[in-house]
Length: 264
Ligand code: NAD
Image (cartoon, rainbow, N blue to C red):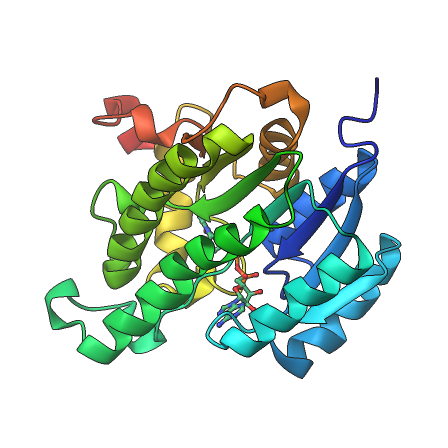
């Protein structure tokens, strides 16, 4: 009863360090009885992820760069051989050239547009197709998105466009995979101090702005995203799919801040 993910096996993609959103979700999942596997992007991240994975008793730690088809093939092949089936995947991967996470969106280059879309949007579809093969008994896939998909946020630029495409792909994937019992949802997290988060220009201002103008005047921490992920990954949400669930202290509902908020 206390363990929402007992007996379930899940793959966590996107831990870079102990500030990563994927790490917050991994801790929550492990605390609720899930057996976890991790992927990491390249050896440098691998060295940092290993002790984290070890601390949760994870035995599978696999290299995987989503730009490299062969590494995705290899990771899913190992999962199939070792586990045979998979119950959930957490996709917490995004990238754009830092030089275009400031200034104007209109100046986005073709190369970085393509790269941002591939890593931050297409990779989730690619992973979902591979996951389908391992989820004959159904499953739950989640990805991470941000308010910049819905409205213009300063400096978020091409990443906002990629997140909009990611949110649309959550709906298309949910429609495709629902008949096979696979649910697909996104968590739209408020601004958090992570490696990827701090690559966006004026990150500190956005961080402060969210805290001041959201209904709940607190920052969003790893355990808050972890809690929402537990619900989406577990059987508590078996009739929920295609959703974008906000964990942003309520920021998304505000049209205009109260005068008293502006005075603070
Ligand atoms: P993070 O830097 O800890 O995680 C980003 C991860 O993406 C890293 O682990 C990195 O290795 C991985 N990655 C990038 N390119 C990759 C590639 N080619 N192949 C494999 N992995 C690759 O930062 P985070 O904030 O935890 O980011 C996780 C997700 O959460 C991202 O999708 C991000 O856009 C989203 N998000 C972040 C915030 C925030 O404020 N930090 C808010 C909402 C959504």
